[in-house]
Length: 335
Image 1 (tube, rainbow, N blue to C red):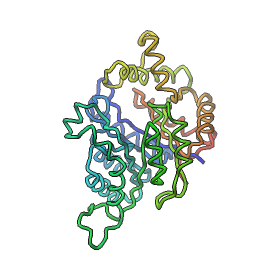
Image 2: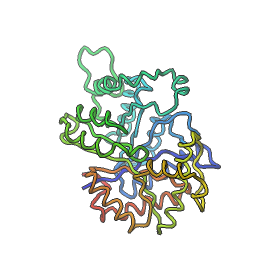
Image 3: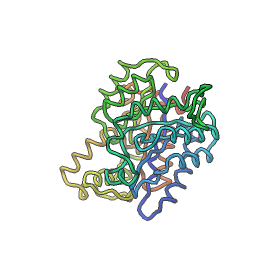
Image 4: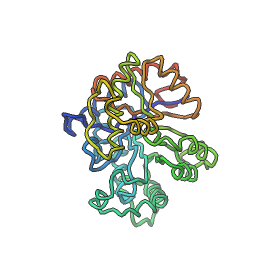
């Protein structure tokens, strides 16, 4: 059976402030828990007025405190931005407070632009040491040895599952080599998905954390009562991706009636490629689309993001998805 989880990019909508987005995420996390989703992740982004999860560990702590059973974590922490010891301490603290509920997904991209990297005192070369940094982080979570000089407190000896995130073949190879679960960012970078999954499964080496491969593609799902309503809601997502093509990043915009007047033919084609794995429609439409995707990818789990402007419509989208899960041959709660 395939589990379903939530990726919340904590979108700041037009007319709102980051605090509004964070409070909406807390409400959505409670809602996702009530619907039986497996995990709820937020991601590290910096200097983006439309995303409020820059202080990722702080946000995770608030989400975990507001819920009771759902796993909460990072999808992900951009490890080149941090010393592994600091991340071990932060997530060790979260695991100490919320035992058995914390996930730590790790990426090697900066999650921002070059100028902001300099403001964070990070070098563009920091990502070169990503594999070594992952191993160092693993060592900090291992039980401390009798003569170990540097320990993560809290952190040492705690069970914080690590995930490798990626949008290229690099992450799939590293996840396979280390025997870690793998999440692919096909919700915005779909091109290498199938090749990355194949490499991950072919090269996977069992580890103490994981006996067999566990692959989780990220996808966009926007569900509504009708196809027309869902496609209307999806114009907010499409506008956001047009902004990425134009080099303009802003707050999530309200849906518009005619997206064809908003983008050029070239922009439309570019966005369509980036949103290859955006599933938009009514329950019946999504059953067909998602069923085919799960069958093709052989995903062990899917992680769903739903950038919908209206908060209640966003909650309803996750309700619809949870409602059709049995028809997809999936389960919301992992075994």
